[in-house]
Length: 228
Image 1 (cartoon, rainbow, N blue to C red):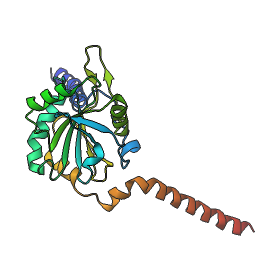
Image 2 (cartoon, rainbow, N blue to C red; image 1 turned 60 degrees about the vertical axis):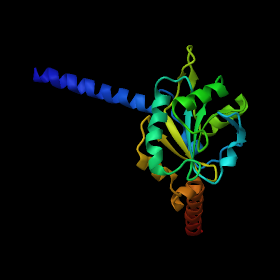
Image 3 (cartoon, rainbow, N blue to C red; image 1 turned 30 degrees about the horizontal axis):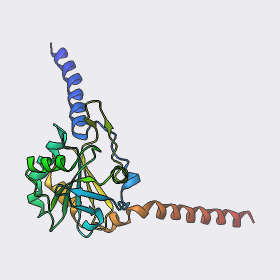
Image 4 (spheres, helix red, strand yellow; image 1 turned 30 degrees about the vertical axis):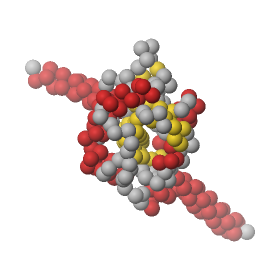
């Protein structure tokens, strides 16, 4: 009996952990962070729930919490938005300390859709904006910049990763935070000013390559001198 219970425990527990991981991360392919971190966002035109068109670079100067969603999502997107609503007051005031953008990646979402999403979730629409891209070109330029990959299903639902993207005040991809429920401490750390190491991260590969090349040349010269 004990062996059977132990066997069930060892078999079921990993399965439960796997399903919990899949649900929190989403079923889409996660971003390739090495391709995006430290890279600037492109200039893209967005439309908010009030019909105002603006370039995302108009928000430059403050960090941005970018939340990819689609408005008719009945599961993860709503949980993500409601979780954000709980932690945002602990971080500061949207529009003054940082921006929050719920960005619909559904090419079929329109202003009336994001307006309803905004109303359903009691979002102000100013410091925290709900937006769509002006056109498909801008949509795919933005999702490509954050390497957010999704797949459309027959019922117009999407397979996608569950995440937030923190954009630095100078409009560079700074950090990804995965899941559907968020700890304000993780977001607080992501919003804080970058350390020297974080600022240098995009250049670390080239610094390492330069160091490797210099060391290799030095060793070759030493060997060449000995041979002579």
